[in-house]
Length: 306
Image (cartoon, rainbow, N blue to C red; front, side, top):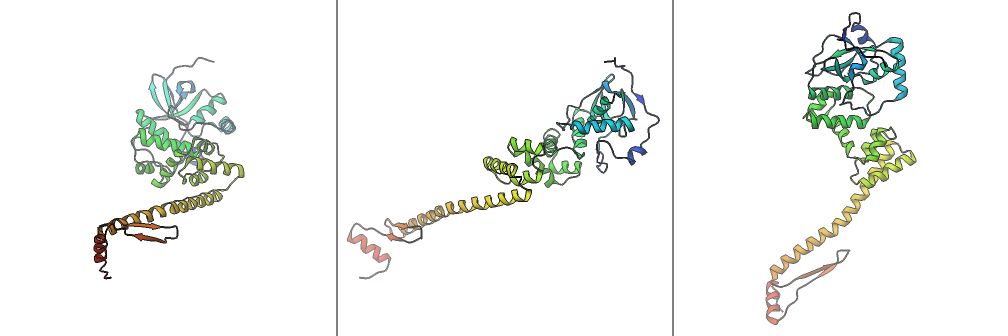
């Protein structure tokens, strides 16, 4: 490998921003997203690719090799349309904030320098910018987005409403993504690998029991269930569970009611009263007595004259 010259970044003089505004970013940047309040961007520079360290907060866990090679070929023909973004971490050393695919593709085609924006950011701002800017891209999978949302809430202290404002999503959407992280690892991996869609996962998560979740998931994979089919299976299962719970709960309710009534009658007559019922709610009430005097007292309570 050739030695990297630790020179100051070269300022760009011939590259305007008009072209980047007209052509789509090679990384599919969401241009409608609002800028972050702490963004501070210097002039555009050219930096040697070997002076740029990878982003430790990168939420994307995998890169499609074919897509990366296609991007490299596009860069070979058209050059870098959208500069990458970095922050300076030392003399002639920079840390990537966004644009890792562009950086990797540039190395593939042998570029030594890459057009770059340099932002001022501390560690927390770095994390927030990296996560939010990557979330705003369309090619993150649902689990990567969910993990990014969770990290922004945990590490940056953002509430779901604040997070929604930053990424242009409502609170319900943010919550739906975060709920995916409660699914069993096997289902999360399948969603990450595009074996199932977020619609499948959102239907499955409505079942609380992880074993049943996995059972429905396996059926979904084996029989290629549509989202609608999964929703119907989950709804049918929930209705069955509710019916079973109702049947189990009803005898207990009736038993409690009989016990309460038995206690009230015992107090009323001043004697032990027993109530027995069957499944059809037929039964009997017994008021035992141990002497003629006790019987007379019970009859008096009933105002019964022999």
